[in-house]
Amino acid sequence: MKVIISGATGMVGQGVLRECLTADDVEQVAVVGRTKLTQVHPKIHQVICPDLMHADQELERLQGFDACFFCLGVSSSGMSEERYRQVTYDLTLGLATVLAKNNPGMTFVYVSGAGTDSSEQGKSMWARVKGATENALQKLSVAGVYLFRPGVIQPFV
Image 1 (spheres, rainbow, N blue to C red):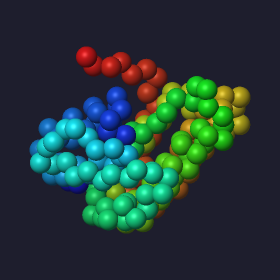
Image 2: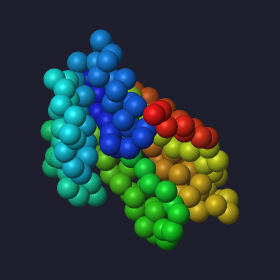
Image 3: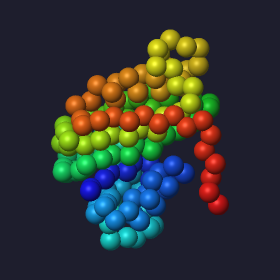
């Protein structure tokens, strides 16, 4: 199996990366990010995209992948709705759309959050934006879309 991970330097992404590297059935892990990982492993193929909002050219090369674990995310604290939407909705859908076009048989896994508002009508800005993102992802032309809504993530030390 060949997998793509975005957000591999974050807490969730690090855990996903660790599991993929130890899984016997995962032969290649394409890590998409703005900066190079310090970790070296024979399964890792790094795709450096300094500007993830304009990464189509780099992402076009990712073909024949079975799954994408989208673990990239930011806190909405202190952000305007417009900026949070750019990072959470626009960036996610931009990457997902390119990857889906080139990997129609892939499974897309999105790490969202408990309290996400699928109606997109609630009072909480972050929950509306996450809900809109989830709703749009479910329309991708891929083998499957899985949405995870963790309530609390305890770092493993």
